[in-house]
Amino acid sequence: MKHMMLTAFADISESIRAKWFLVYSLVFGGVVVALFVSGLSESRIMGFTGLSRMLITYLQITMAILPVFVLITTVRSVAGDREAGIFEYMLSLPVSLASWFWGKLFGRFFVVFLPVFIAMVAAVAWGAHKGAEIPWYQVIFYTGFLISLAWCFLGIGMLISTLARSADVATGAAFVVWLGLLLFMDLILLGTLIKHGMPSESVIAIALVNPLQVFRTASMMLFDPQLVLLGPSAYVILDHFGKAGYIAWALVYPAIVGLLSAAAGYLLFRRGDLP
Image (cartoon, rainbow, N blue to C red; front, side):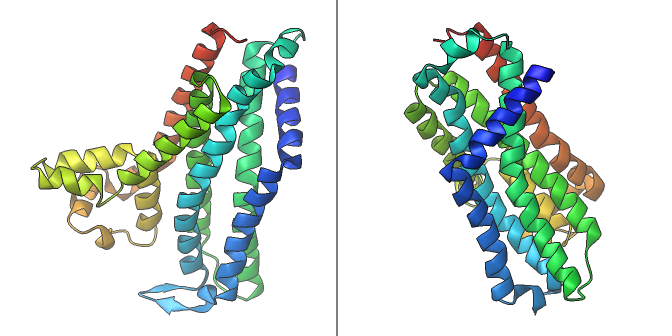
């Protein structure tokens, strides 16, 4: 445990000094500032008002930005260390492979989640300063959704990084995974499946395997319990899950995907040829 914590702190220190972390933090901070400047927190459209509407917009933007940032930066960790010859140095120290791998994972989770969480806290603090009603129910669940989503893509990133033999290959594979998940959202490839006669229940099941779609639908459900924006597919989701069941699914399922991916990555990492 001590070695794992030291590895995590070392990864946090290294990441904070990296340029990508500065860009990453500025992106999420800039998103919140842009929403404030646009007056979104003071507008009212289709029943969404004040901070509630600002949070749902922020979450939708985060869904597009967070996964690709997490994947691209994470996949270069193991693959980059392999190319740099760090493994030989690591094996000469009294640090187990498990401590190094999981310490790196937990350290990277702290780094990628912190700017997202701080930006959300800033939005809540600004709303409280302006006297707006704080939707604590949505804030708490949104925080849980973000934790689950970040952990999911961290695990996937570590798995890709373990499989790839170079940082460039790992980066390309991460981009393909992110693009594939985007394509399997809503009307692109799912529309093609429906066009060719696949039952609607099967199409919706495929969509709900996609952690991005799960995150997006759950964030909508907090403000639209009947999922009116999804149309007829909402009946299938609500009949099989219900509101509470689907929110629980959105909190647990991406985290399980990330944990299983990270565990598979560790097993491959431990059994593989490190140099």
